Image 1 (cartoon, rainbow over the protein chains, first blue to last red):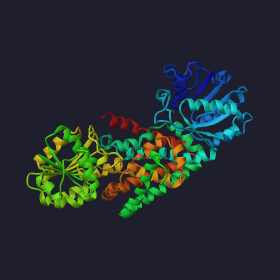
Image 2: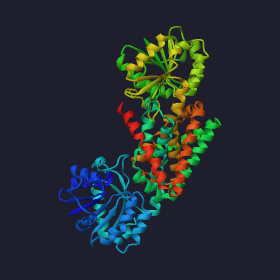
Image 3: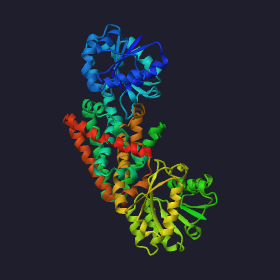
Image 4: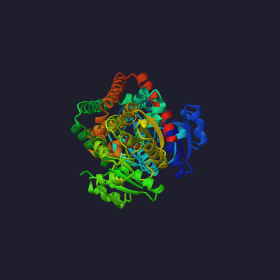
Length: 285
Length: 285
């Protein structure tokens, strides 16, 4: 069997590394328009060969589309046009509504499986890939009933094999929730990093005064702009709403601080503390 | 020698645990108005005895004031009133301007050393204390020239012994920088946690969809409201300004998303990426 990784970055690369360990006899081929990524993917043993997009589709049982989401929506019609019968295309994109809409419009929709693994780091590219990235993480499959059972089964098997826990969801629902639990936290982190950099012209002040708390909160500000700008764009209605909610809450908190209203500040933080329980996965009281 | 820890929580407890390892012959006494904290501090070997505030001041060479900042400002005049000559009082508070102003107004100012260790976790209380918390972290001493050389020397020695890197700063400067590199990141995290909790009535959605990125960004939302409300209040002018800057930036980013202005989004994130270089410097230490 041959599997192609289209876009050998952090996510596609980590998926390949993890699968290779379970399936030493599968051949992996990579497609990437960056010659640096090609070289690193080969050197790191993520893929055995670099091929063209057309060759990848011609020889692969499963094609894993792991590019930024703007390239996913751009490439998908062409990929479905040329995919041979009985073969499968899956994506790993962080948005699902537009991607699924484009797939829905294609006569070969059932050869496509819409996938989003809830895993990533602030780093990007094949150099950052590692085989444990997906282990024990959640993964969402959208519109599973629109995929052919064979394509769905193949994808589910591989996701299970790399140690992921599979959930099923509608694309609209996916994009709404993701705006809050993922996209918003990236924006809050980018904005925090930039606010501090704009203020602290003297970096030494940041070095000397920032604690591990700051570095954890601002970690996502290191994320790839080329990956995130199209995600925010494709999910702009939900992201804008989430960001609006966040800004409103910040304004209320600022107002409480300005008015020395400690009761409101305390209430605000006590309610936020509940996220600890949620994060720990404790049952609702 | 006897050292008193007034407020045996995360920070005071960790400082004591670390010092005990270096100085097995120093006796540590604790003062805390929570009987639970008293029991845990004794059980964990943070202190040898629990005593009253007055007794602590009567017997200790060094008194470490490690309560929330509202209790620091409340207690300090009394503590300086009763401290015997030649003995030292240091605080570990996260704000410095008001604390130093209160100290300045006292005739025994030179027996006080104003200290802020850049260390903490989202947890609180003596149960969360651990001896490595302060190791390799930065610590700021404010207005060192106002402390008696003997008091300053004693405090510097102990801070050095627990592995901290000492910096010197004016209180005004300290509070301004801290608003950006620490206080703001706590507010952004509290607000993020609350925005998501308000939206996601069904916690399962958060469990299933949140990735490690979310949990890192929202980690500080678990912090103690009783500790942070008085910090924001004592540093309200700087915190309000920092929060205002942050809100302005978020609005600009929302505007770029609403207008599908990818160029501005990309530029915003690329500039924020520079925090990676700064963080590498922090994490290297």
